Length: 222
Image 1 (tube, rainbow, N blue to C red):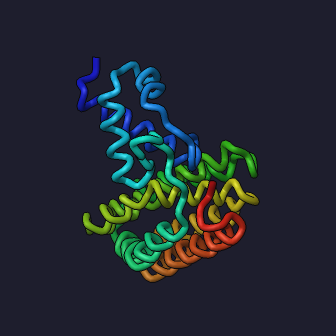
Image 2: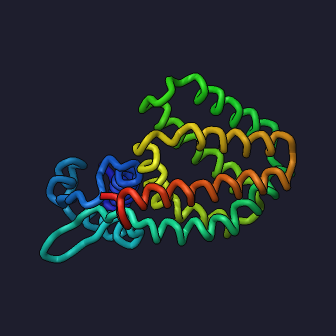
């Protein structure tokens, strides 16, 4: 049997992932009782997990209304992306000089697997998200600055929700895959300036895709 603290962590991470990947949709109600039944626990660890998710901005808790999944705010995502555009190209520039051959081989393997999946399929979309996270994590791991890594990773749940919403609207996977390959190519070439520019282009295009989606959907994705 899990201890209360450990179980609260597990529930927090599980719900966080479900919200991030839109398994729980924006505006959807989350019942403490149903979640407690799902995880086979009392309401206490569920309540603790939901409180942490509220601090992350992923749920909204109102005394009389209960808990709902927060809407996706394009303004908040764009504020985060502005910071990413200042920090991540620099991280990619540093990583290009120090990334290991082993890590490059793993990136290449994942990109090759992605290319083999059926175009426009759900499997390809899901795996593309995994590869994108792995690529960004690899760069953060090799940038030599733990504070940059901490800041960028704290944005991930919000940014991923926008990415996935983009993928679900008129399939935008092709340009994202191309951008990931361009970043990888510059890392493999040990080209710091090229990696900087490829990452800057990738993040700028995220801004463009998000703006187009915002114009279609309004301020929030519902």
